[in-house]
Image (cartoon, rainbow, N blue to C red):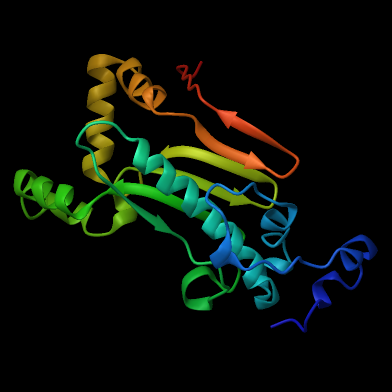
Length: 203
């Protein structure tokens, strides 16, 4: 582990702007992202536990967005919210945190119903949350991502999506996503709100 602030020692600007101490538990819902939410993910800071507090604050901002989005989903659909870990942990993230995310996936009751339909073998896809299709909001040092993802081992959801698109095209999926209220992505000093999705076939 690097000594405290060693990662900033050769950067005069960074040295003059130490991480602002934030009580993450007190963050308001949908508080705007700040510069340190991203900078704490940039190497070599991404490997230092000195920035755990900044990454925890960013993680909780992502979680607030995910929970807000889950609350806006229409109909009988219920989604669970999960988040990544914010501290460098060799056994999990190789001792570095270069990406933080929150995601929404099937809740336990939905998995139970689907298992009865799929049978024991196919239902194994559902055991780990990330192997289900999920909506994701994520941060990296130079990027923010809002996406729908299916893990390469999520065989059922992957095949189901391929068949639906082949039969009906992309429009039904886009309509469902665009019917949700605005994705609340806010930044300090301004905001970006993404409220429309388009999808084109690759050339």
